[in-house]
Image 1: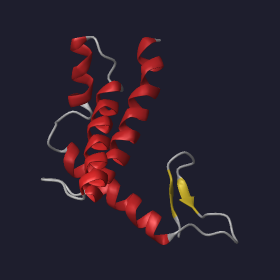
Image 2 (image 1 turned 45 degrees about the vertical axis):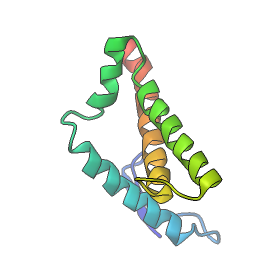
Image 3 (image 1 turned 90 degrees about the vertical axis):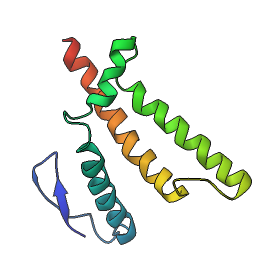
Image 4 (image 1 turned 180 degrees about the horizontal axis):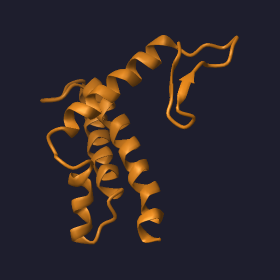
Length: 114
């Protein structure tokens, strides 16, 4: 399944004979859409996470904490078999998106301090 390679700025074709799982790539596309949709509510990119710096907390730790909250919900689901609000799939999607945001903010840190 071809895609765009953001590092090289060109179309990406996975090496053959191994081909990635089409479901995996479909979920990645779904996660990108989720990220864009949810991000539109916050104005400037990741500003909601960067705001944590006003409390003396590095920005990357904000999405990392949210991951902890989502994991706690999944643990409750694993134990009780039910949750009140978001589905386990929604929590897993949020964890994946938050992990990427945390990485972006962590990788930004040295550039901002330089």
